[in-house]
Image 1: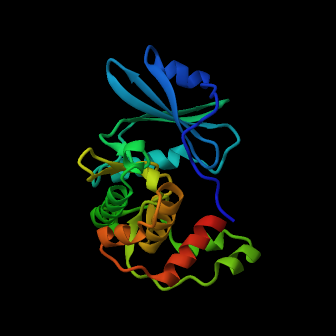
Image 2: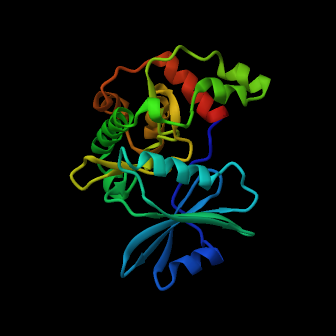
Length: 247
């Protein structure tokens, strides 16, 4: 069983009225649909580029207020989008952010260079973990709290929580698309931090390495782990992949 993959929309997308209003005279382009159906739009105009993430009403799993709070906290420590605005109406909720330099690690430029992309994702995740202060973080992504929310049958499938290797502030959804890569192949920042919080670093490492196989040809996991600076831990990888898929 796999989670549905996030991807750039291939079908016609209806732009919500609030996104049209926020855009003004800017060009509007849908650029991403996440696993739960939330849409991200790029607004491009004379003043530069902004992004609007929109979640339709009735999608409680996607909390854009929670993401805005996490971005505001993380922005003083690492490269993440700056929050420009947020709001709610009867149609849903939205979050407006400034653009960061770089392209998503699944941009066609990097899909054609999988080793470079995997290296940037690994190095970028290590930089994120090293830069965000655990003791100051008010958010949690602990395995204990996540498993406690599962039904008993699902919790049994996930298995017992392994001992913590290293506590870090986790990204929370460290899949390949959420790393931005600069033109020189270096990591440039991270996006989609709606579940950022303190947890074992393997919660991110397991998911990031799993996502490589969904996006790139060949096996580039060794490159990813070398760039992060850690040897694979099969037990923790298996646990955290199961938790991410089933949770």
